[in-house]
Image (cartoon, rainbow, N blue to C red; front, side, top):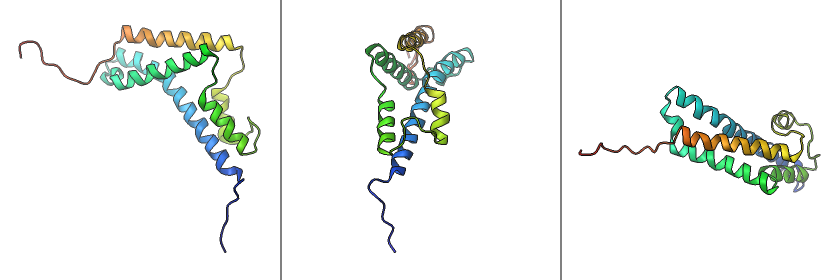
Length: 146
């Protein structure tokens, strides 16, 4: 007996939607937690908190978020997640376990200007850390004369 999967099987789409939502939450956690790591890491002299790759990734992500907010663009992760949920024939905000809890963390109801303001202020805080705690490259330079 052969098992044949239906082309319209909603389960893979639901699982992919949950994966996209989980990735979205992980990125948000990196952006928010990254700022805390930069500040706390500098206060505790954690050298890796100023690693150039870490700081560039952090700055790039918050720059994208702020640009989306100012341009009125919907996050591509949100768009992809909703498309996958529609392909799974589920309500946009149905109540799977993963979806329920991660969406509670990620999505809030407020006027759009509130999000633009919050994202912009957070972006300014990230920019301030570049000035106050500048990133360092991993290259070691010899002191002059050596």
